[in-house]
Amino acid sequence: MANEPLQLNLGSLRSAISLTLHTHHASRIWHGRPAAEGRPGIIGLNGYISVMSKMKRGAEQDDPYSDWWMLRIEDKLDDTKRCLQTLREQVEQALASVPPALSLGENLNLQPVKLPLFVNAQLGFAAIYLLADYDDLARKLMLAHHTALIDRSTLERWLNDGAHAMRSLFALAQEYCFSGATRADFAENNAAAQAAVQKFGQLPQELLEGTRRSRFAPPIARRGGSRESAAAPTAVELTFASIDDPTGTAARDEDATQ
Image (cartoon, rainbow, N blue to C red; front, side, top):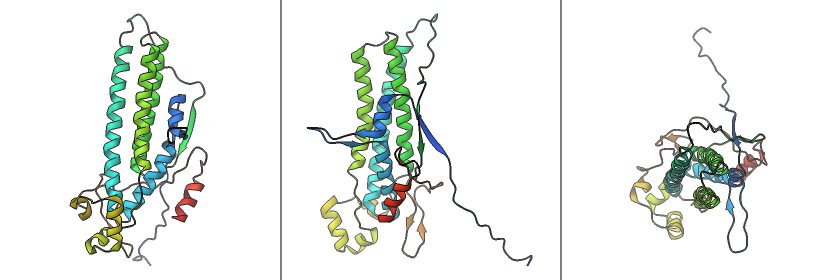
């Protein structure tokens, strides 16, 4: 009895995460933009996170196109971050012109919205950080305009520049589609691989070989249940929920139908 191994029935890790937004500008980005006459709709951050979950599952299933998409999203996230950083530097420069005798406090919403987040994709978290950054940027811009440091046209232009950068990221993610082909299919050059190439185009050899993957790529689930190491292993598995579905039930139901 003393030599028998100790059985530890450990459950899954969970972490309570929420996002607090103070501006309507950031809230609209969370919800997305509905389709209107002459322009298509764009998913919001909640829809983007759902796409990132599907993309991560695709990469886990050894779909090289999903790995290619993860790399594209990483590059787009970097571009968006640089855009917001440029806007932040501009508004900080404007706020720096306040006379030393004048003290400006933070302009916080008296009734901010607090959104519960249940996210299972690191590229989803990366966009959440950007939205939080944009919310902070919008507050500073409105403060600068209220205190006559920037004019109305500058306020609107910089707010729109930041919002456009965020929506451009989401619009790119909207184009993602699971190919249904694996690297084994490409090694065999079978019908599944040929159909994927015809629909999505040719991929670089390093992606087909799996030597180039996103730093947040999940381990590849091989047939038989084994997993192959990825560029960066995942740590905590969470379930996505939207503001309209805080329990994540709809997302789990959707996953069950995939």
